[in-house]
Image (cartoon, rainbow, N blue to C red; front, side, top):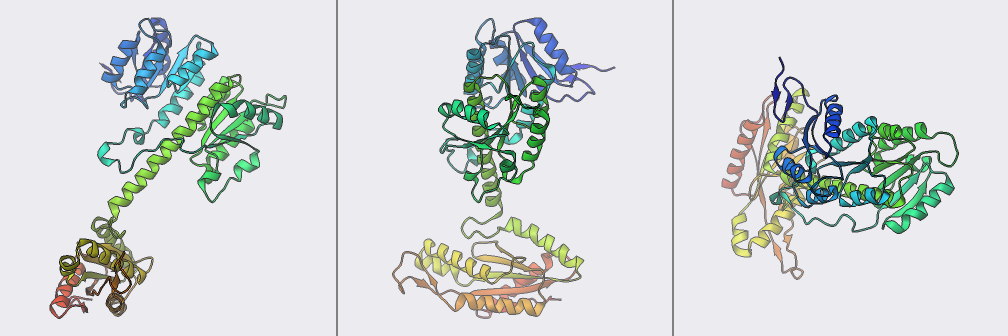
Length: 474
């Protein structure tokens, strides 16, 4: 027999999400609970604003359904409280209200509502909107811990965005553009279907941040719902617009529900006032820019995790993993893997005599010269203070040895020019020693690395600025 676990739903039945229902009428709460349970959502309920705020803290819901008319405080006050708390500022909130007042709807949007649905709420639209907001609430939306924040966060509207009104009849598009233009800082352009699908630009600023698609046919033309929804799916698959916000002007709640399930970010029902449309488009652009900032930060963090910040070369962690992959590839081809350990000769003396700034300049220049002599498929990494690792998967032992000699010459033949020095007065002559070994086909590169390391020690012992092949080379 299935048992009930408080706050977790029915044992044995996986719940899709936890939703907090806030309504002062018990019947309304029960009806919504039944609707949501039918699609496997877990629910918690509150009859007033203060109870709702406490439940948000204790139950951590994934989404809130909020009535505006509460006995102890206004629903907009609850919204403002949620948005003021960093822990809940991104929590999806759908306002469901009996009010049909345009000013009340807009006040809810301004307070931070993700959507405002009028009672009685269309079931299909409500569930589709919940699905849409839950898809949007990804783990990356969580606040980034301060210790991992590597750059200052800029304001989301440092420059005006571009909104493309797509699929509108010319007269209607021009009228809507005239209504929206005074209400937000963004540029508004009229794009036909062909322009949208052919969207491409050398710089992202030439592409729209958001597109609003007309699916209403409100100029007297035939129903546009099906063509508009088809255009929506085509735009979502257009590479240049992959991250653009998509909004749809829908004639009916059912059309809005279909649009949400097809991936639209905002479905605006026909008859919504211009300030509400402008507010939702403005918010859509803001979310898009915040997401772009997170993607950029993620790329930076990945790059920093895999590379050496001074030289820009791969670091030891990446190099060891990549060498394993190269060894497998070499084994599949029945070939060996050439491994070099490179060390800058007397590098400590450079630091002691000229300072660490000069030592850094030497490391950067040596890295650049080594990289210039390697191919795209070769691996170059900084694995220690002045030590580098090179792996070559498509070179024989004689080829690897010849390349090592060229690398030595590339470093010793020309001194390193130091920055911010007078010509000829800021130069340091350096050289490198290299140990080379070949990993036998079908073996991991560890043995070759040890052999190359021993060869490097021999090169240092025998006078430096030379190449020694490992004695275990195959």
